[in-house]
Structures are given as structure tokens and as C-alpha cells.
Image 1 (cartoon, helix red, strand yellow):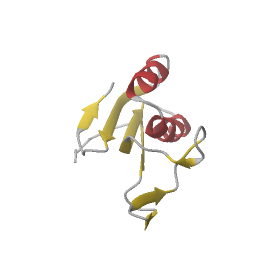
Image 2 (image 1 turned 45 degrees about the horizontal axis):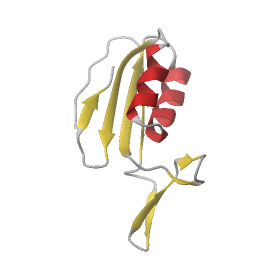
Image 3 (image 1 turned 90 degrees about the vertical axis):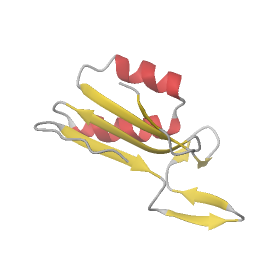
Image 4 (image 1 turned 45 degrees about the vertical axis):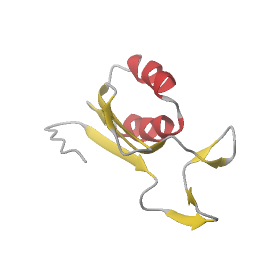
Amino acid sequence: LEVVEIDNGCLSSAGDYQRYYMYNGEKMHHIIDPQTLMPACGHIGTTVITKTDGTIADMLSTALFIADDKTGEALVSDIDDVEQVYLIDDGGTVKKLY
């Protein structure tokens, strides 16, 4: 959906497009919403680019997949290492959050 070039830094993506199966017409994937204990919904993909820390990128890509956009924006705004954040909603629209 997007081409992103980075010279230095870390990139991590989370999504429901590879590890899933269909059950009664619903996509069941591996990213679980801790509130519902069911597969998270609202996003189909997230990508986080950080300056130096791949662990933070990985953690945030999963957390942002579960969070709503407002909560996600508040979360990443306080982390200096974050350079860019992309969210793909369940309609396929790419949004650059940060």
C-alpha cells in the first residue's frame, strides 16, 4: 500500500492479512484484544518506524493495531523514538498518524 524508505532505524508491522482463518464468515487472527479476548478489529495493518529501538517499534505496531486512533495517537506522541506511524483501517484506507 505504501513504499517507505529508511536509512537508519527500525520498522515493524502488525496485521491480520497472513495469520488468520475464516470462521462463520469472520476473520479470526492472532492479535487479540485484551478487553474482548477476541481478535482485534478496526485496523487491518499498522506500521511503526522508530529511530533506534526495534523493540519499541514491535510493541507499538501491535498496541496500535488494537487501539482506536485517538488512543494510539496519544500513546505515540509521548515516545521520542517514534518517527512515523501508518494505520490501515478495515476499509483499506492508509492513514499517516504521526
